[in-house]
Length: 565
Image (cartoon, rainbow, N blue to C red; front, top):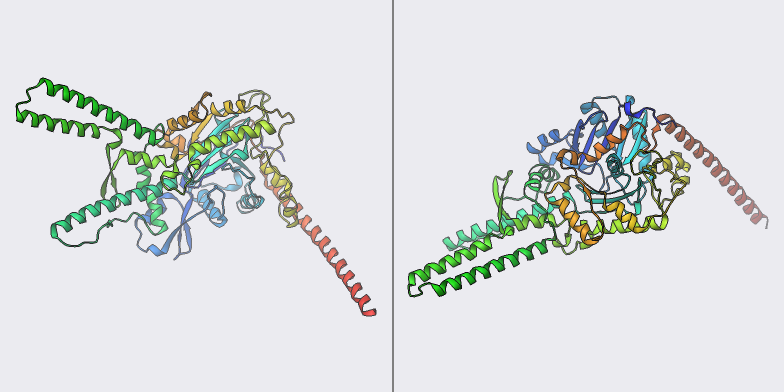
């Protein structure tokens, strides 16, 4: 197929679908035209799907019949669609109500997250069917989010740390190639924090209710059931849980949570030692003063003791971890107080999930998977080799941007015969959409070279990465594991740009004059491949029928011989 010429002048529709948010717009705009949840509300009474943040909020906030509505997702935890009917309806909403465009007139570019394994051929086939048959786009392309982000920053190598709603994903990229078997992810992301926030605040509310009721019981000398707050944050319906996650919990995370620059236990130990040191110094000063002052004055001694007690309490209260932070839970109009230690601990769960529950392994924390991903990438590249560009400037002469969806351990024969035998798109078409041949020159890199390439190009993205102190903590985790290497991070300080980084990276790539990040596929080519699949199916059916007839004939001959005997 012919690649679209003059791509920089061609207006494209770009859709980035995350597990939490779907972002869509045109590639000639600096900002997306649409940012909506990757979920929808299903109206059971009218049998329809409702999309769009504000339409969903209107229903969720003015909920009268709780049993009438329910929230459903479209993508699985890996960011791959599983609810194709809902995806089609969502795209209908995007094109008709938001972008107000005709799909037949524009190329389409969509992004998918990186994964350790190849995308299933059936998923790609459904994408092609949706794009070409249902919406009739002229051309179509799928690209990897981390690859688009890295290349749009002018880098051919990098370590992309994407901290999203469904979890954190680490993707190493060397010379334009995603090292797929080194892509690691954890389930501890924004949604995990939402759950832990609810549990922590509910526990605080129950404790306050216990204290209030216990005091009332003591006054009245009555036995009262205690321990449960009248405010229940653990919502039972999906629409109530969705509303919390998209309103006050989002605000709570941005205003209350903060990440320490090193493990929380180390910070607590440091402040404890500082407090003990200040108390010792104060006590020494008090002992010195008591030796020089008149100790015969009882009032003076009592006043000094009271002042000493107050000073020690002040030293304890001056511990930064003991500072109080107040937050108004808007749905219940209840103000709750948390120590800074508790706010730090919530964010610490991303790095040490075992603090939330002993069933969560420590090695699945963010620091652990970052270290393992880098080491696996180095081992893979040094043993197998990868394409090495002749220049570090993306798009420069001799630069090989590498395949858009490539696995260093791919098996091109896994889907071939099965697809053609079922009359679907032929295997070569799907294989080409998910991989490109590596350059003929393959040079092995030493592990030290891979470490240097990745650690000097650490790219931090995703909404959960906006927690205060996150960039410094990731640097600390890397410095502990790779102390001898220079570290450089790239984290967009603009909140909007950080949230839209995957979409903006794809837009940047689509506006390059010679974009060869992957192959564009046309509807005509899809139809040709589909026809090939149908012909192959008919041929296979004929061969199977012939084989079946031959087998029947052989069985008849055997039966006749048996009768004669």
